[in-house]
Length: 209
Image 1 (cartoon, rainbow, N blue to C red):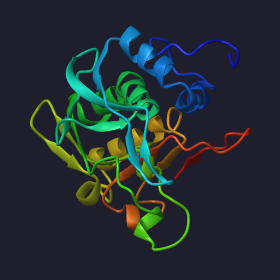
Image 2 (cartoon, rainbow, N blue to C red):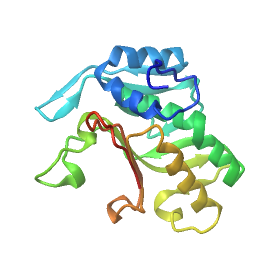
Image 3 (cartoon, rainbow, N blue to C red):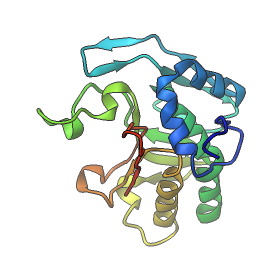
């Protein structure tokens, strides 16, 4: 329900995504939710990098606790709402998709990082990327418990189980991230899933492509 407080231990609902985005305005509450859910993390010091870049709500996910998935490279640092959404994605979508399509759990997520002080697509002009405030992460692939590696770049065109898993992973990220962009969106995303928690005004429209 829209009026109930967010609880990361509860199933994802219709308003979960909007509540996650709203955590940008309350870093202390976001970190409290992570602790309550058993997520192990280290709060990052504020980073000042000009008017458009930097962050005040960064956290670095740590192994152990309620999260079973590790991140490669290790020590992923993101905005707190992105970290909370990653946890919910693991618990309420990603692992279920991996078991259903591949018969094995995800043990690691490979990524291209989060914080990067740049504009969208690296342009010299135009809107600033959510990466400029660590409010996004680019997922490149997955490692499974049985040793397999699923790559967005290599396996997205696959018409079998690997391709179906990747599309299910994208679709199940959409309820908890404000923006989910895949290779189906444009060639700039051919090798990763872009996940962010962009704030888009009162209506809070969401993008999933």
